[in-house]
Length: 145
Image 1 (cartoon, one colour):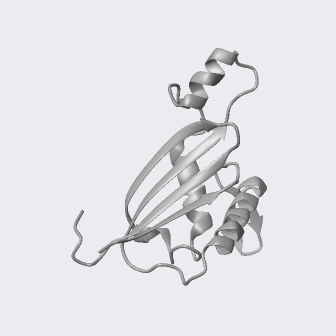
Image 2 (tube, helix red, strand yellow):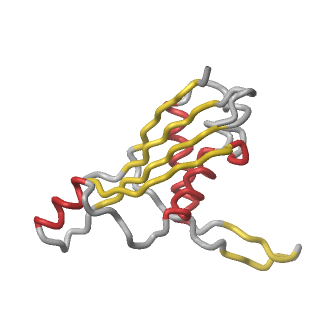
């Protein structure tokens, strides 16, 4: 039987940006931009507040949905369509960049490493208040779905 966990993080999703580089006496060092680094740290802290157990081991199936702000400069009609889910975000940032930053921020807290994720589903939605919704299923050894 699979174990299923559901977590919600009241945090504005931030996309993974290209790493920055700096030259040191040991060569070139890559690092995350400050905005991404802060997001990953804050997401990790929020996860620790909700996750009161050791990081999961083994194969995982993850669903992660990102709820982003509705732009202020749109009509009331369009705003309603976006909030109802009839119109979905087809604008930047790309969903894969949201996924990368979120999964990295949860490493070592929810799971040991995001390489344990063998199945991933994700969507972008509009919301009055941005947040991230996470569902994790721990797969059993004999579960091949």
